[in-house]
Length: 478
Image (cartoon, rainbow, N blue to C red; front, side):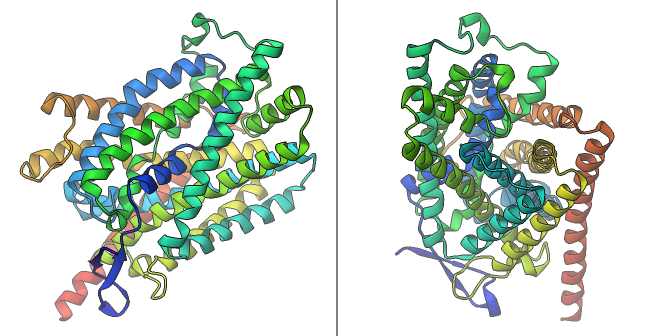
């Protein structure tokens, strides 16, 4: 098996990095990361115009984003992905903050995903889980992610692979059932061409960030660049194949929900399960056994999605620990499994604390989901404010760097792609801040999202400053 040597293994030894990701595994990993079933219900809540938004933002954001990531990922395929790109372009301080924000967002996001997990269980099987037990189950799922993530990549990669396959099956099946439902009963909403035209009003704009957010994750595969068999060749191919599949499945699944449920009745927490339950009852006479299988598969995709992101985020933060631009605890590598075990444990501790805090402040399921989701999304999107301009800076600083893939259109094409992507991120950040969760006081929402974002940024800079100070002291002592 082809391997490369990685600096920074325990005891200062060199550790071999197994090459476990070929093109097929990379496509599945990226589909598992980007194709998130937990946001399909939110996009469907926009109504049929949401399909128009998928297309417009696919052209204006998703495709340029794929171009930028393909060039960066093929030119700098090093372990750490987005951290390496930002660090090389803007310096180690910004690289560390980027890596920290990219990492901590997963700890903030995981509880909201498992709130949806529980909502799906309640709707599917008619159970009512008390808030206390919801919090306990969410925390248990968080630590299940930690345990799987610490396993060797050649083992844990099968979770994202299986999750990707199940996502496609469930979401395509949802769309197919929607087609059958329309043939038998007619559509619950009008799909006339005029209904696809986006309406730039408060209702649609409040959900618009969900679509851009749902497109994010192409760079995640590059965070494990040391484990890719041929990154320069396969990263661009992966983006093309995975990107086309992701856009098609997102739209088809959104159609499936809207085919059977009126827009005003779509729940952002249980929309997918509501639609599946209705269509199984209408089209398959209940078919409880098949419905149960579909729900279990859907639940596994929630878990698999978080395993995928935790692997990528922890590989990214691990690079800062190995670089001494963040505390070495992040770079600690398990001597048996070769994974950043301490980083996974820290992520679990933060997610546990956030879960407890969220349920203490507001045990309402929808409010907990949207507030945590908004905070994690804002924290998550900030690194992209640096990643996209890094493309232009790196072209200027390192014009002779081999680039197996280059954005079409030369310098003009690079500028257009960067501006479109940067504008999409800025708009999304503004909308996340502007629209609080329904039923949550604006002051509370802004304190949580704004305060959480500022605290996260300050911690990132403190990590870099403290590590740099200690590294400088060690050099002087030597």
